[in-house]
Length: 156
Image 1 (cartoon, rainbow, N blue to C red):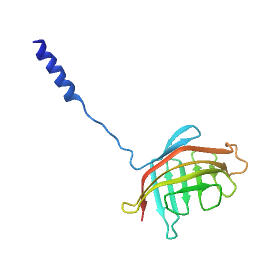
Image 2 (image 1 turned 90 degrees about the horizontal axis):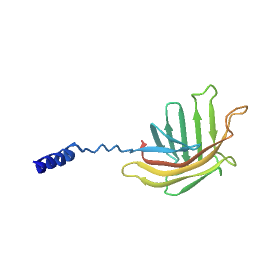
Image 3 (image 1 turned 90 degrees about the vertical axis):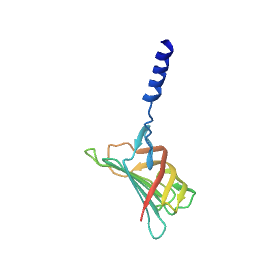
Image 4 (image 1 turned 180 degrees about the horizontal axis):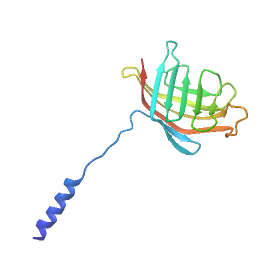
């Protein structure tokens, strides 16, 4: 009797197990001022000149990364006005806007994979962007670190 009960419990354990796997593919996320941040929608485009733009959105925020190509390499921020990171938030009473540009802010966008067949792009990013709104009471610098974008589809 004990063996039957033991086998029944063991069988019940195996039957009741299930896998609830949730994939985060595509994904755009990072650490914004030491708080986890994840986009709900992400759109990547490449224009005729080869410039890549990735727009990541939440309900009231937009993060935009721009590079002057899609090659697998490191793009430095704060060097010019073509490779940039921009963050905008519209939920507060005063709009927040942070950006990198020539001599303003720093960081990197690293493209680790450009899949021309499936039209996706993956990589990492980190940056310090400066507040661009004068007379703002917001923090002067916005920090994103450990940023990752994975298999973001490139729109035609």
